[in-house]
Image (cartoon, rainbow, N blue to C red):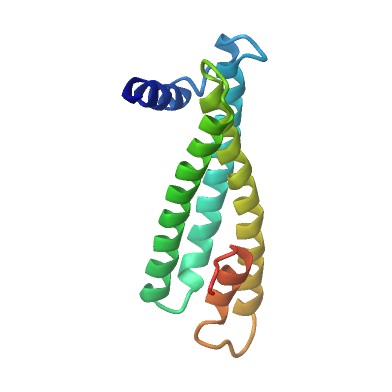
Length: 150
């Protein structure tokens, strides 16, 4: 069992190592497909990071920024764990479980990208208001990033 987990972890990490060379693998194969998903997911993560860099200075204080950063870190851990289960649950052989895991991460990053884009629009809109309550901008993030309160 440990050998399977180690092999699975190696396959996932190899996507990052070979991400820039998707054309070196046969199209339609697990590695080519996984590399493609990995590149797409990384593009969304980069865009999310840039948008968050625009949002942080507009929040009321460092406490809010730290809270949002902690939530983002927890979200990243959540998608890693969730998508690893998705990959394993496929029952596929070879490198395909890691391909499905990377596809899941790309899909969740895509969703998070559009949610972050909406949060940025909300925060920017509130920044133009004359009076904004202490946590209204933070509420933009809570509503659009699907942070569950209850």
